[in-house]
Image 1 (cartoon, one colour):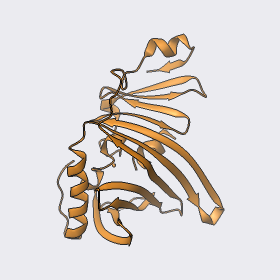
Image 2 (cartoon, rainbow, N blue to C red):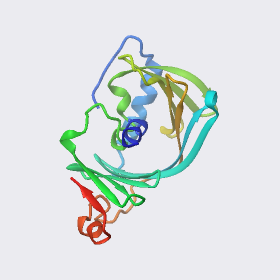
Image 3 (tube, rainbow, N blue to C red):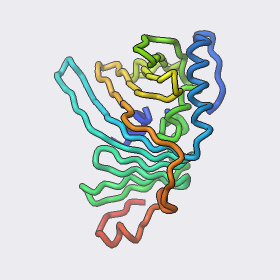
Length: 210
């Protein structure tokens, strides 16, 4: 589950130029990154849908994330995932446990919330796809063949340069979609927004695995 959270969000900074990339697609993506760099922090609410029509599976849930630079706190599938640049904390109220992973043990290839809107710059080729109103879809294909991911479809509002959705199309017929339903920037955050309170969870009887 933890892997799916990271990959999906993710399911997204170095410059990369493949001949397969269309200039229009790259220009749109670069505007998104440029817009993001102007904000101190971003708060989003989203819906998540996991669907495989072949086996009649469709599951929908809601989540939220606060992102500031490399730090983030993600509420997703009844878990809290917190990253303070030093460690990644997965807090599970259902299991009453906290799993702590040092930042040095997290793969550079993982698409974390802090990389959500810039991950495309490394490891993907991209082309324009369908357009619906002001939303332009861009197809991102892994440059290295993946056993799990066929491609990613990114929806971008070309009027405000914001991502509206991200759909990971799986090679096994399973699609994972994130649709942003609320997008706020430069919010006044509490000083402890990205701080892990170990004493709090110890007092609640949580098992802490570090």
